[in-house]
Amino acid sequence: MLDRALKICLVLSLAYNPALVFAREEPLAEDPAPSLAKASPALALQSNETLKETVRRLRREKKRQYKEMTRGFINKIITEESVTNKREFLAGDAKTLEECIERAIAVAIPAKTAQERIKLAKQRILKAARDLFAEGNLELEDRGGSLSGQAFTADSYHVRFRQPVFRGGNLWHTLQKERATLSGARAERDQIANDLIQKVSEAYFDSIRTKLALEDKEKMLAVSNDILSDSKKKWDQGIISEIEYLNVESEQSQLVHDVEQAREDYELITLELQKELGLDINEKIELAPFYDYRAIMAKASEKFDKERKGKAKPHSDLGETDQTLDDYIRLAYDNRPDLKMEVNRLRSSIMGKRAQVGKLLPQVNVTMDFGELAEAFTDTVDDPSHRPEWQFIAEVSWNLGGNTVKYTRDRDQNAPSVSQFQAGSGSTTDKHTFSLALLDNLEDVYRVKEAQVEILDQFVKLEEKEREVVREVKEAYYNFRRAGIQLDSEMKQVLYRERLAVLSKHKLEQNEIQASEYLMAEKDLSEEKSQFHKAMADYYVARVGLNRAVGIRGLLPVKEWE
Image 1 (cartoon, rainbow, N blue to C red):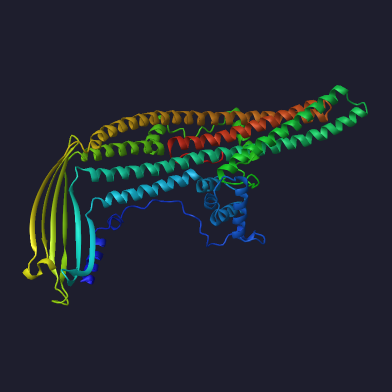
Image 2: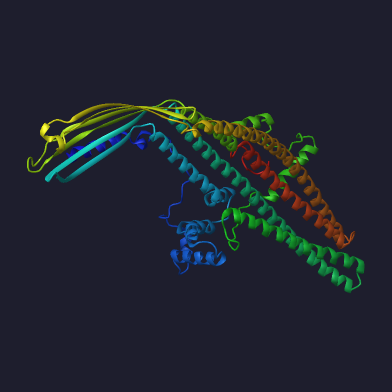
């Protein structure tokens, strides 16, 4: 009998398992985690301490830094996997923008939180889908004892199903609500990724800008030191005036200040990039050069010469100008993740209201119970035979203005028990029950109104997000166009300052100007180079910003200016 009951239980579990029913659902594409089983070049750089010792040391250091932080939380954020991934990232060559973006998304807590929300939404969908099916319950019982001084034995099994027949759409709309929540969670994850791309790109390009600016300042300082040394000798020999020497000395002192300022800017920007990449302040990385200054200026000089000679039309790289502002706005409506997130939240609120309305409609459930019972006195029968038992219950309940009206029909058949075993027959009953509970369920009435208010609130948020998206697209579009024009202008300025510097050097060699005048020309060129690097960084950031505003990563490829 037990084997038969276990077989029934297995069949029912396979038939009513929603995880199998919904197994065809398309899995969520997640970022692949690097395998720890693969050999890493970073591991070869370790000294004598093992990976586990490194993790323990980092945990101790973190605890010393933040004494109020619990050890359990520290153990979660500092793991062997996180340490290995960081070492692999630091051990590579100069980092490209894509590598920095992947690292930032992998370590960002908001991205991990969004991924956990997606997993939670999937579990809630599974629960909502499960509620559409019958509830199954298997009960096995083996008992014995005495009745009126006579020993008896009994065993039984029962299988019970409770199937919702009609719930006013409550179960179905609850499932649709959870699906909308899942879509919103995925859109939230995509928006977090887009925001991270924007932040990392800004820090990346600013780091390159400040580094190049620092190198230019240091080169200029080396030139000024040589000029100051020569001027000092000439002043001592009476070749130049004291005013000229003091002028050179003043310019050199200003360059020292400029170098320190450039170094401070570089360190602060690098600190921002380290934060986005989850690195400590003492963990430095080398960034891959994104453009070649000399190559760009050579192309620009050739292009401008052709324009001046009338062999080419004036042109600046304003991006893919074949797409108008309206085109970008339409793309944003179709692809912007945060706009999709608000739409799905609105849909979730609408489905939630429909589910609440369904609770005010009649609720019909059917319960079926069948099984077998064997019970007898031991002095009469050693192995009592099994007799069938069954029960059928139909329930109808209705919330009428907060009052619950309920009708139940219960029909069942019981197998013979020891109390009536001599009769050799069981019992069959048919029972009808009607009940009325006054004002016991008022919460379902006012929750409908709450759901309606939530829909209106969410609709207002959607409208606000829509205006915000349109404004961001317009700002990003004009920023991109302006950045292209500004970069074009800066190239012309740099070419102009380079020729002035060459001319000043020639005049200095011919003793037509003083060293301070040549130094001023070189300083102006250095300042113009800094402005060029800033314009180049702004141009690339503007491209990334327009991609983010539209919601399509890579719509405008981040490539070298042409």
